[in-house]
Amino acid sequence: MKKDYSIIVGGAAGQGSRKAGLIIAKIFKRLGFFVYIYDDYQSLIKGGHNFSQIRISDKFIAGRREKIDILIAFDKKTVDMHESILNTGGILIFNKNKTPEEKGVGIEADAIVKHMQGKHIMANTAMIGGFLKVVGIDWTVAKPILEKELGGDINMKIARESYDSTKEIIKIEPNKKTKNPEYLMTGNEAAALGAAKAGLDIYYAYPMTPASGILHYFAEHEKELGILTIQPENEIAVANEAVGSAYAGKRTMVASSSGGFALMSETISLSAMSEVPVLFINSQRMGPATGVPTYSGQSDLLFSINPGTGDFEKFVAAPSNSEETAYWSGKLLNLAWQYQTPAILLLDKELSEGTFSIGKSIFKDIKKEKEIVWDKKGEYGRYKITKDGISPLAYPGVKNAIIKASSYEHDEGGLTVEENEGIITAMQEKRLRKFEAMRKIADSAGAVKVYGNKKSKIVIISWGFTSGAVREVSEKLGLKFVQPIVMSPFPIKQMNKALLGAEQIILIENNALGQLGTVMASYGIYADKKILKYSSRPFTVEELENRISKAIKR
Image (cartoon, rainbow, N blue to C red):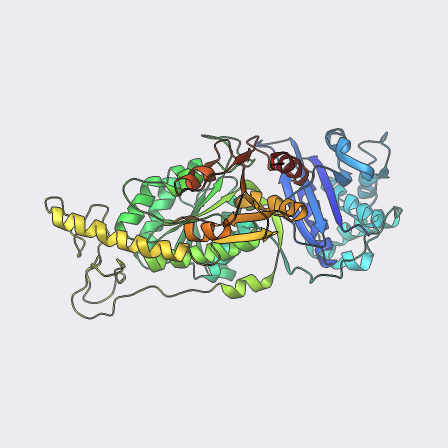
């Protein structure tokens, strides 16, 4: 019996197609399916075509397919744009009051809403109700979710009327073979919750797609999470205010996207020199400058590894799904505070705004870990030279401690030095010793993941969101897939171990330059072939299977 379905819900902006898609996904989650949602929308103030592509499966998924099994069209444009990718035997469900001439399952959505004296937007409720009947989902399964998500007596009457007046065509049976995923969560939501579990106190951000969802989530749940959420006037203010809060002893995180993150680069240097820890999130757009604001790419890797001036390293991690994002958001916040250095979580649009199945257990592994603090003995030196380069922390208000934070090179007490080459050299070497310890942490277990046929001599390497579809294809083709998550300091020992015995290495990235390939080459790892895509859209599973098959040595 088929256990992998792809569904598109689409309409004009403002018709509620995204909300409808999320409700449908939650119902399938309740039926025991793993879910991934790809949301597509244009960078317009008003209008434009929006759609959500929902994929459900009896196993974990994090990539979309080219073909779909069901198309739910709120308007004629949705039919025109997506009907061609319906599989043979696929089902078209459409609003009969908008597209009366179509062949498929027509739902009198507008008429039902009018009859129930509902609002115009409630046509999406009617479309959901009709869809549930078409695929044979019992009303008692859907009702609790509809009540929670839609609420209101009128909405429920509209959904039920549409459900009762529609005929069942297929029946999607519940998935009982695997444990029911506990949550559906976007990458942005996962980043917020992971940091919260690791003791985040304050979040600063200026809205910028696709990172804005983190700001919205924290603002909505500020009291529940106990995290102060602040929106300053621009990205430069965001970064600098975050350093101020961290200096005062509050665990701090900021987020932006590509161009906004670029504005923070000077402050990242300040964070490194002053040894004031801040977690920065960069959710990548596609292309230079404004790029393609609401679409995706992986073109900020090299910049995220090397922002700011001077000799310093920082932790950089690039997860591939919500579960990894939650873990590494918390992990990086802890590492930033333990090593008193900036850390960067690298996301992209599909990861930030895509919705993934996620288990509760991941949050059990995230907790606030202690930083090294001053023991209050002797004279305090904020930048005390130590064997491992990590100076004990103290915060303003501690008795008998003068606590400085300087962007200038400084001595152990934080006083500026320019004339003393010996002190300048000693302080630089102090920080370098810290970075050596960071490299060991970054190269530990979990920095690199291996999937698929671990005995295969053909190895696929990819990173970030692209890894989801690559993993699926690699497992189908019997290939080894290596996914580095930590990008800086680069986990060379773990990578060499994972690549041992490889006869062909194929690199897959969602950018034009093969930026991970550039990083790997600096450590003596070279790809035999590269599969790159830079159209601002992610790879589909079928596309990858075709391109990987052609790239394999015969």
